[in-house]
Amino acid sequence: MLIALGVTGGIGAYKAVEVARGLQKHGHEVVAVMTHSATRFVGPVTFEAITRRPVITDQFAEGMNADIEHIAIASTIDLLLIAPATANIIGKLANGIADDFLSTLYTATRAPVLIAPAMNSQMFAHAAVRKNLDTLVARGARFVEPGEGYLACGWIGKGRLAEPDEIIAAAEEILRPESPLRGQRVLVTAGPTYEDFDPVRFIGNRSSGKMGFALAAEAAHRGAEVSLIVGPTELEPPSVREVVRVRTASEMHQAVMSRASDMHVVIMAAAVADYMPERAPQKVPKGADTLTLVLHKTPDILGDLGHRRLASGRGPALIGFAAETQDVVARAIEKRAKKHVDLIVANDVARTDAGFDVDTNAVTIVTADGAESLPLQSKTNVAGEILNRVERLLSGSRSAESASPVRG
Ligand code: CTP
Image 1: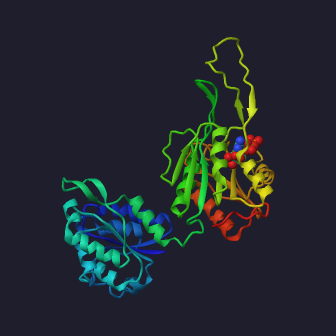
Image 2: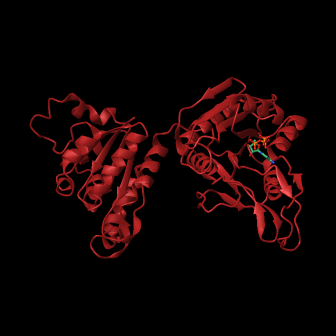
Image 3: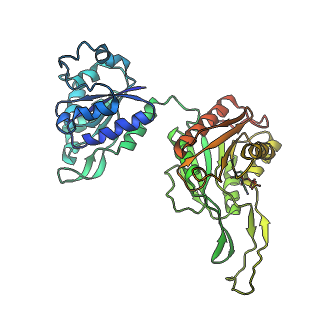
């Protein structure tokens, strides 16, 4: 997609550089349009180097007007994003003043408009600015609210340009075609489980929850209503509709099973313990040279969901993970069949750059259509790839045991 990034003269202009880079990372092309005062904060060369396109700084700059692309930009862009937007540009846009390239572009384009205001908090609260913002909202412009905090002018209050990540996410939301996940209830499990064998000790695993968190965040980003069931982890979960903290496999089983029938999709990304020790009521004292723990099988959450769906003929789309250290794909194919699930994400946890507690993952996605290996990439990107396939499942209802996910 082609995005015109309008940059106006505020101290936050430097953050627009990061916004441009982020948009490019999401696969978009960016053309920067700077007002005269913006060029006093950041040099156009910076944007030119990053966007690899000429930066439009002046409506009538010599040498620019033969450039058809620059003239045609109003009809070719998919989004006009202005970050930071000063009170001045907001006033001009609201009142149809078109005295420079950016304000002219606003009146000339029919592309969606996204505005990230940044100004002194008193200015932001001023009736004139509020009225202009209301006018733009009524006309369909969308906004990324400024943040609160220290402002360059020394005031503390609302007015600081939103963080680049928030601006990029808001742009993505506008540009992304409507996802089949919008409005769907998605349950994601994440992290390890801890199985206590006395009041102070437990058996756990090295899962950090990162993959499940990335899936939950991405599903929410696509408009799903996400319930996240999370085992013990230090990491902060993303803010989704519901976060439920559990400790053991049995607690996770209870939390998942009690919600599953309301869900359209269940993604079991948690590393659930397969066995739990018998729990001693008191701390086990040091005694003999060896200590034997008796372990009992935990409930297989995904297996139970699969069997329940098979028996009833209805239930959510089921996504599982297969953490393996050998014969990764063959074992994943087996697990998919055994647990009666739609899609298994297989990962080789023996690799140091994939699997537990790292930010990257290399997975093979196993569906009824076969196995597809994806290259090593960030867990956020892997989450996107997995959800693209979940979207296909929801649209096509191609599921393991011919049971279609519950709808509505
Ligand atoms: N899983 C589950 N309940 C368990 C164990 C695992 O729901 N008690 C889920 C995991 O969240 C994962 C999938 O089942 O989505 C496969 O987990 P994995 O540990 O790879 O497989 P297991 O069934 O435990 O088999 P094994 O340990 O023999 O590989």
